[in-house]
Image 1 (tube, helix red, strand yellow):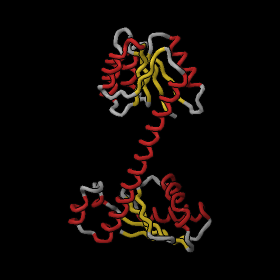
Image 2: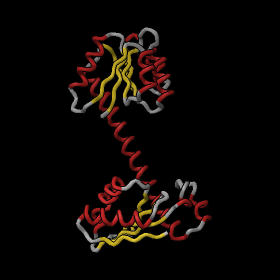
Image 3: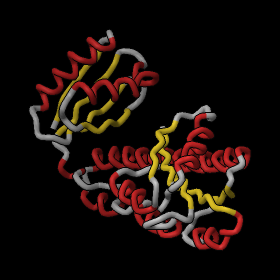
Image 4: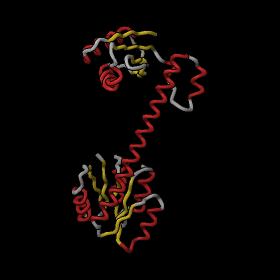
Length: 248
């Protein structure tokens, strides 16, 4: 759920924006502030996804607010509301990266079109962040597997600019889980999620094919006790026959 902050010293305007947001299919957490100073204090305590703000307000106007908000959250999406004669103020806001401007009185069609654009930007950004995270996780698993099999400290230096290798030389042990069928081809994600909840130790996971998963133990513990725990859990949770072996 996205969080939206509406900033306007006229309560009627705030209710109008709330009404328009209530027409949307999306669910929002909606916050309000009556001036820029109150909004800024709120932003220092709680991040939001979208800021709607009027320009002319007491204590701190919209221009100063968007400047300060940009310092707090460089990627915050912001919308300026202003009367036609105040366009010069809006241009000042655009200099600090506010790309969305809606004239008052607010036209519902224009408001929804502006919000549609913002929501698409946020969705695209989140999708890209997820892809980047997945790519990085893949690289880390790939290089970690190579490091485990090579055990060469020089290898860490070569890849340190590509992945976070901090702690790799502190690996405490390995636990291999092998199934009798192609369990990990379809159920690897469920296995990892379940085991991560089951044990308190920090584990990294390296898939070794359709039948094998390698657990890399990063905490000090009795590897063989942990292996027995994993063996009991996986056989009970998935009703399969698994072979579990621990090694240093």
